[in-house]
Image 1 (cartoon, rainbow, N blue to C red):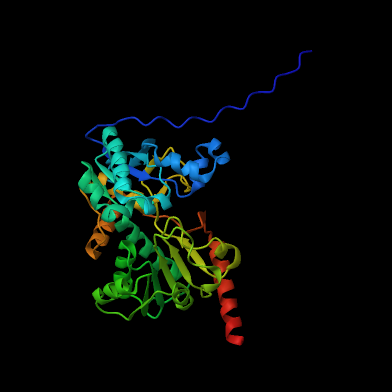
Image 2: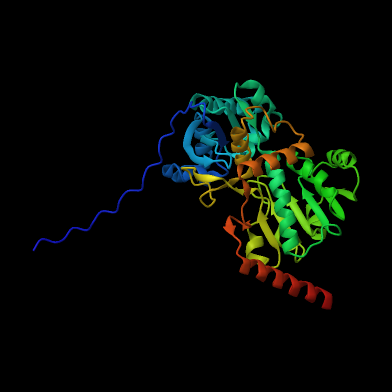
Amino acid sequence: MPKPKTPKTPKPAKTPKPQANHNPDVARFAFIIHPLDMGGITRKYKFAEKLPDKLVAWAVKHKKPWALSEITGIKSKTGQEAVGWFIAVPLLPSQILDLKEKFVVKKIIKGCEVAEELGARIVGLGAFTALVGGGGKDIADGGRVAVTTGNTYTVATAIEGARKAAAVMDIDLATAVVAIVGATGSIGKIAAHIMAAEAGTTILVGRNEGRLEVVRDAIRGGNVEITTNISEAVRRADVIISATSAVDEIINPFDIKAGAVVCDVARPRDVAEAVAENRDDVLVIDGGVVQVPGQVNFNFDFGLPPGQSLACMAETMILALEGRYEDYTIGKNITVEQVNEIAEMAERHGFKLAGFRSFEKALTEDRIRAIRTAAANAREMETVS
């Protein structure tokens, strides 16, 4: 008898090629992304694993932006639908920060032009692309499509998440010490203004004391301190909101107080992964993760469960659904009024904070209870000793 053939494993479906969409009845947006580390490049180009990092970095520096995937299925509570695109600008964080700014801005504008050709009417700047050109201003001025960094909705969701996490850990914000790490950046600055009105003490943390003083002096009311010593501030804090543009991790496991909440807004993350391995008595949450309304398909895996996105991405979607095709969050200053406005727009269209996540994994109720128990035990041991 002939030997039966082993059935072939079906090949995974290819990501659909992005298509232009100029339907005036559909909201249209795009979002600029870039690799956060060398792994982000080698996952797409396997052959690059065998090449020196310097050669790979040189190659991506000279590669043009392209449409990576089409985003479909977004549907607001109002009934308005939206379609979008991820546009890849192949630069590493270190390149975005170290190369001549004019070169980087020009490359991002080229990415915006790719988005415009597909039909996008507003473009969000993701991760480190939001830092250059005066916080997106030069990109908005140099292109024809509206631009936003997404930082306003990121602030709104980070603060909402920090408040909810503090409540879960029985932290009373009115008497708590809250540290804002990266307090001179656009996200940290407005977070400091909002939290200073709620916290017992707010510590502004940054690298430049002079710039910290400017932020502190602009805050009206509240007990506000400044420091350039991250470890010192973290050791005192009951709640930490971290939103720096650091390339490396800056919050280490043994600086954090037992029972503290850490909301990490930064990408790449500010909190060391060693915290997850060594500290079972602190609640670390990923900041700015939201549930998108409708049956959204990003056609690209960026590490979140189906239907969820980062708040900076969601801001671009919200503005498109709202028909606000205008430069929204650009420059270094965000107002409290803007934060409230984007939160209202998000609620109107059905965007909401996703459940707690930590180091890109969902936090279950059992896990949170275990953290609370470990924190209580750690505090008891400190009291005894």
